[in-house]
Image (tube, rainbow, N blue to C red; front, side):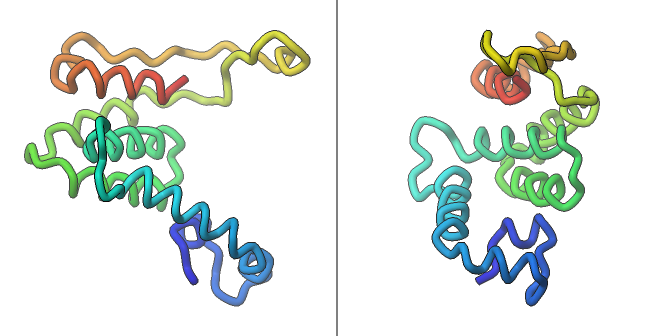
Length: 144
């Protein structure tokens, strides 16, 4: 069984990594199920497919791994019924706000010695009006 993770991680059939990963059938199945439930649910519920795909594309673009970025960009573009308007904004935001990392702050404790300051992403007022309050807030939270 080839999963999305196999493809995005570049795990070739028959490779030593594929052999090791193949032995983890339950882990592979659960990862694939998580992907399906999060990004392709039968009933999206209160979070629309566009919102789900926009956040995934934003995060993937921020990490700038070509195949993953391209996968989620295409997913968002297929979902965006507004002639790609939302997709263009989300992808522009990701491409133009990317910063070197990792950075952030841990809760007080032993890991807090690794705290590093970095820029906090915020959607501009203009972009927030175009994206809507929910999606703008989701993108800001995804960058945390």
